[in-house]
Amino acid sequence: MTNAMMNKQQYLTNNFLIAMPGMDGSDFSKSVTYLCQHDEQGALGLVINKSHEMTMGDIFKQLGVTPVRPEIATIPLFMGGPVQPERGFVLHTPVGQWDSTLQVNETLALTSSKDILEAIAQDKGPEKWLVALGYAGWAAGQLEQEIQRNSWLHGLAEDDIMFDETLSLRWELAAHRIGVDISLMSTEAGHC
Image (cartoon, rainbow, N blue to C red; front, side):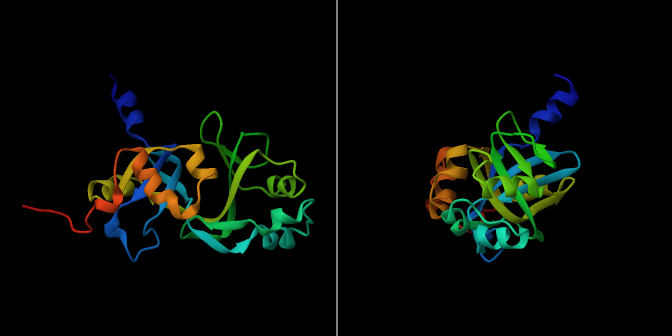
C-alpha cells in the first residue's frame, strides 16, 4: 500500500466525532460532530445535537422569505460549532445543484448559499436537511492530537442519527453504533 493510500484511509470525512465524557464544560460537551471534510490541511464539521435558540423563521425573516408551510419556520437551528457562529450551513441529502456546495459523499453535501434556504422555504429543497450556525474547525494535525488525547471517539456517520433521531439521544446512539456504552465511561483517564 502506498503512503498516499495509507494517509487517505486515516482521514475521517463522513465520520461522527463523539465527545468523550471528559469534555464536560466545553462547547463540545456530549456532542456529536459530523465531519464534512478532513484532510492534511485540517478538518471541518458540524455539531448535530445542540439546538440553537434561533429557528428557521429567523433565517427566513432575514432573507425576506415567507415559507409555504408555516411549520417550517418553527424548526430549530443547530449550534454547528464555535467558528463563525453568524454564518449558516445546510447539511443535506441528496446533494443537488446549489451555488456553494461541498460534496461530502455520494448522498450528502454541505451548502452555504442562500439559494438552498429559499428552496427550503418554498418546500423545493433537499429531502433531508439541517441548518447550523457556525462550524467546528481544526488546523492541520489538531484533530489527530485530540483523538490521541482521548477527547473523541469516532465512527462512520449514519444519516438516521443526523436527520431522524431525537437530539437528546444522538450522543449515546452514535457511541452505541460503534459498540460503546458511553454512559459507562469514566471522565478520568487511567495512567500507569
